[in-house]
Image 1 (tube, helix red, strand yellow):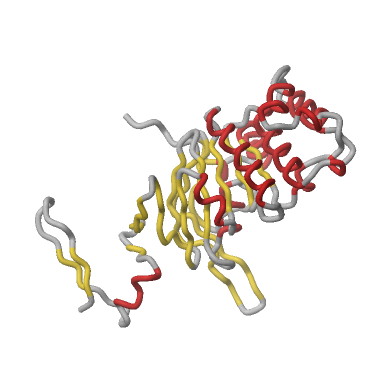
Image 2: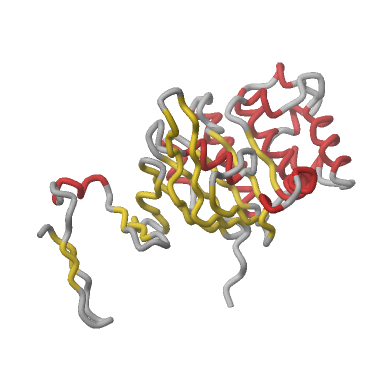
Length: 270
């Protein structure tokens, strides 16, 4: 029997109120994430990346649907129980490196504070070393580069023992060298069995993750895994086609032909 996914969402929907009316930012998304995988969520501005990420991180309540983390439907919990469960299971890494840290604490103190909050007595020295921050242990955030601050944010997740890290554009404000250092940190965490989900516009990230989920107009357009790009059929039976195929169906209609299980399914214009 396959292992239960660490994070699963079903029929996730999000509406935003605007002066001109309601806008549907996320449209019936179904996803699951196993332990230890690294995933990039990509798509143009307005595709729903940030809205989806904030719902997966349980920072925004879905308009409809389920977010299940480690077997728990977090939005069925009380606000206090949900906050406690989030604190036990996940870390959210913000886009701006400085937003993840306390400005008055050194790198070592940042990690010690997290360790105490999680009743953990070890890991600080280990993760400073593992993420290349041993030389910055006495530095304040203002004395560190953007890449060092983002690596420290991931070190906080590692020290906490959290199994899930959700990061919003963690390399957006970094140069190539610092981006590589942050992605190296993500690789280290994945080796420890932590799941990392990253929303990104940074094409450099895509070669470093296990899976790429492409959003278009709030829905999943394709999922690329193991070098294979797959179209997606949601639980309502709707098939998403890659954008480069749209021109073959100018009327928005397609003919579908299939036979036995051993025969290929054919899709063409009527």
